Image (cartoon, rainbow, N blue to C red; front, side, top):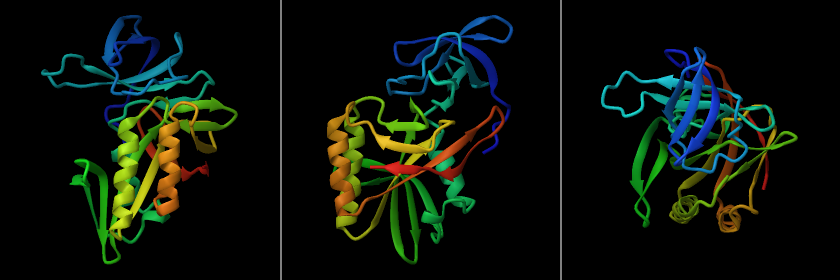
Length: 234
């Protein structure tokens, strides 16, 4: 997915109040940009490391910049803008790069579904029926080629798993899609030590037929796109 204009490089200073990040631009100016990430960003807040940000020309925005990519504690790149994963996965599906999700003729976003008043990230439809796809962004770098999800307790994530289980019970296909915006990794596992309830709920979901896939994105200042599957350790 082409990024236009290309992202700008800066130096990460600090993140605070969850949604604010101070960075130093290439010209040495200290600016505050929006951080669209509700997780802990564990191992993704390295003071003095390289980062990349985008700028908006929307005059109604309080902060013109958005933090996009950071450098992890292990020296890998991590895409921390959680507004991007749904678009990345949709782009990959529409361009036929995900064999597990081929054969559908229509795709819709943010469709209301379930008993817990959720919105599915992507709803795929075709002759074979419906496939409900819930997308999660993965940035928790654990070193040695390992990534984990989640990086913080996520009651919302557990709710989404329950909704996917309900769709399977109704005869539909349901997929949990890990969008791994993290370089230098080759496997994804669940951070049960961070959120044991999520890990337990995922085990139940797997047992009733919810599918899980993980794909890695290539990150660059002018292009971010899903390119390859990763090994799952569940």
